[in-house]
Amino acid sequence: MQETKIIKKAYKYRIYPNKEQQEYFAKNFGCCRFVWNKMLAEKLSAYEKGEPIPRITPAKYKEEFPFLKEVDSLALANVQLQLEKAFKNHLKNPKHLGLPKFKRKKDKQSYTTNNVNGSIRVDFEKGLLYLPKIKDGIKMELHRTFEGQIKSATVSKTKDGKYYVSILVETEEPRNKVIEPKSKACGIDLGLEHFATITNDFGTYKVEHPKHLRRVEKRLKKLQKALSRKKKGSKNYEKTRQKLAKLHAYISNARKDFLHKLSKAIIDENQVVVVEDINIEGLLRTDLAKSILDSSWSKFLTYLRYKAEWYGRTFIQVERFFPSSKLCHWCGYKKEDLALYERIWVCPVCGKAHDRDVNASINLYLVGMEQPEVKPVEHALVDDRIPYGIPKKPSCVEAGSSTFYKVG
Ligand SMILES: [Zn+2]
Image 1 (tube, rainbow, N blue to C red):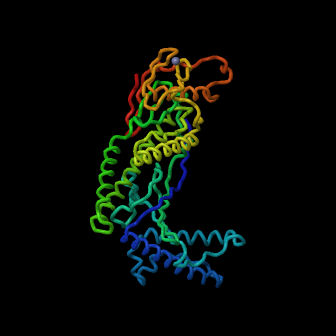
Image 2 (cartoon, rainbow, N blue to C red):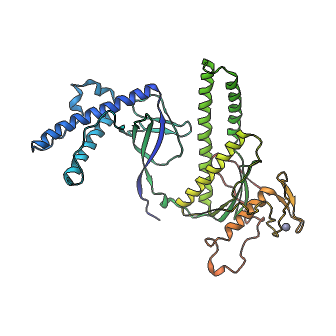
């Protein structure tokens, strides 16, 4: 068994605190800066006199400055640690590291707090961040999820007024979590009727578009219509606009969650992953559907690509002219005049009937099986491919909320 290595990883997200939360952050920034400068002044004066540098805790100031009691005490404790570290670094290497400096209000502002019994939490579904002493969740832009134990969080505000959180997570080194793929290769056809049609060593599966999202998307359309009927700037307009924004955020997070789980399942299961180069212009009736699918597909491909890199798999996107739908996977005949509406076609040469998407995914799978990763050199001249279309053995795959079902 491989030894697992624990590493610390930071994940940074944009956050959108409400007014109350902004005020609370401002207090923390201010108190941290205040305590830093107070401690620094005392330490510097001792240092300049050649006296030993005193060890000071924030508690020392709380009597005289009671406002310090209102903020996160862990944030103040972290200031003490950061300042002690800055002094130590300077004393160790005075040529290259200067003395710590006083902080000014116009600099970038931040504070760091620690996770004590779940005081820092992220709700990935709702896109909310929970921090000590803050009652409600803080809206966050979750462009990616993470696994592991949260150690600390640093809230910062840039000079132009944007808020971010950097979450430090203790996690296992991904390399050590790599599992042996069960299937040598897989081909993925992305589509409108189904999100994806996937062929691997075990057969072909179709993955449905997440159903619950379709329902929410209907509600989204209704709300958009309602908004267009309301007077801009009116109370009702603002209410509807906020509802719409919430729903947008929910959909985007739920979609990402679906795409993360599906891509992870595919990467876990297969050594070589082959997808088509999507060109779906003209295929989609509405702009809304198009933009949603476009972004889902390109996100999905991005996730597959970087996860393949992380887990040592091969990711291939075939060139646009590769006729994955038009080639008969059985005999190799190319049906030049295959129209977009033809979901099922019969090969005039071998007589096989093809489901368009299944046939395309099998052709992509064949490309994967040609890769040297799955075809040892000494066998390169032997046609040892399995007869496609006949699954070796039936199996079911489950990936989060997506629906897989067996074809044929
Ligand atoms: Zn054929």
